[in-house]
Image 1: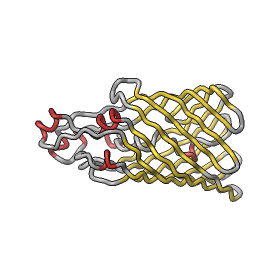
Image 2: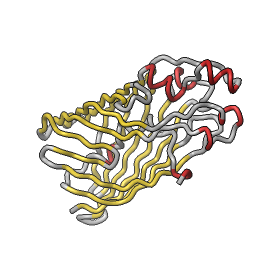
Image 3: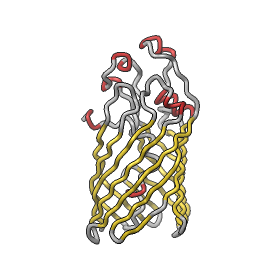
Image 4: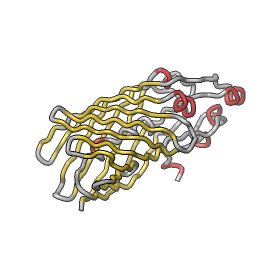
Length: 249
């Protein structure tokens, strides 16, 4: 299943594309596929099939890759504790370049924190603060997004802008090069600091029938210089697409 490993999703995961996380139905099931560019030199772009499992309860919610417990919930405001499985990793065995193959592996991790969402006539504000709980990166991430939804009958468009903050530990684990790795591979030693990476996104949703819904989301993230200047990275940004279909009960 190595062809399905996704190494480039960390800049997209905390946001959780709006088209897949805003439905009010109690339970939705379906299938989706994520495409993401790899930011790494010699890395391959990846496709990841993910089941759509969206549940919205009075106290708990679950949206495929992320779940949470509400501390505060009304029509305009939702504050919850949340847990997120972050699939970002770097597996040197899957890289095409000799020097990159000799780097250490960066593992996937589990992140936990808080999520807040405010809905108003002027748009939607969503923010998530997460920290690694498995002691892999020992890093933190903060995502802040503004979205505005346009409805055209059964079809809706939700453009958004935002930024993702990575702590220094998060960047050093996934994009840094230690002195031992540098001596072993010849890649320059690199110790990045924290970063802010801005992004734009577009979410489209089509209500096929009363129960069936199709969604397509896209995002472009512009890497902060702390990420872009890493000798592991050869891109200035990253495209991510998520498409899926779901059935609401």
